[in-house]
Structure formats: structure tokens, C-alpha cells
Length: 163
Image 1: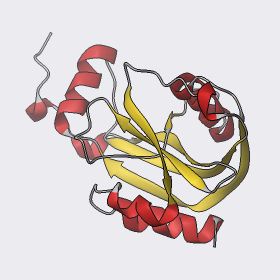
Image 2: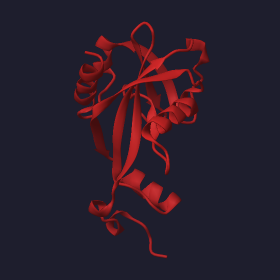
Image 3: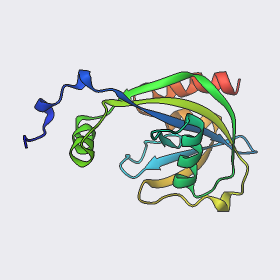
């Protein structure tokens, strides 16, 4: 079997994995953000994940929220017309290819507005994926979304779903 390295992959021929993002808000208009275990201290995102074969985007998001946050007390309120798309680093592409035998070049995501209907003590996040979770006010979100273009996109989604 030939060695798999970045020279053996034609990125242009790879597709994008479909994914979902939950813009989770509580009754006090705080937003739930997560810091993944491989993120730096100032890097955050909304929860979500990939869509498995045969799943609807809505079903995938609700599954991911239960898996990542340990509760099912979420209500889907709306869906954004905007979809984000990003490229994975070559290390992620190679790792997935070696581990699973197939991969994508990145992810395209559908964003949903989600109301959290439970109590804060119910949230028991998946510690092998998420380092920490935090509830923040809307005016403080921009300082947490530091990836290139992340805040600009999220702000557009927020203006659409929560004007």
C-alpha cells in the first residue's frame, strides 16, 4: 500500500462534509459556546457536528447536542439561509484518510437557532471533545470568535435569526 501524504492527495477532488451548528440561546438571551479540546484558550464556537448518512440536518444537530452536552432539552426555532464553508488543515485531512480510508476537504454547515429549555446543571459536556463551555451575552460573542471570518459570518446569522 502506498504511503498517504499530502503529495498523494488532490484536494480539489475532495468534497465537503455536511454539518450543523446550533446557535443555542437560553431564556436570559445568553449564548452557549464551546471550546474544543484542540482549540487554543481564546478559540470558541457554537456546538454542532457532522451529518451522518441518512440523517436530516435537524436530526443531526439534535443528536450532536445530546452527545456533546448531555441533555436533550433543546427546541429548534429557526434555520439560517446562510451556510458556512471552511477547509480543514492538511493534518486533519491526512488523519481522517488514514483512520477511515476516506475524507473531505472541509465542512459546509447549516446554522440553526436553538432554544435551551433545561436548567444549567443538566449540561454535562463530553470532556474528550470539549474542554469547556460558557454562556455569554450577545455583545461579548465577537471576542470569542477569532477564527478568520468566523465573527463576521456569525454576526450575519444572528442578524437574520435574532434581529
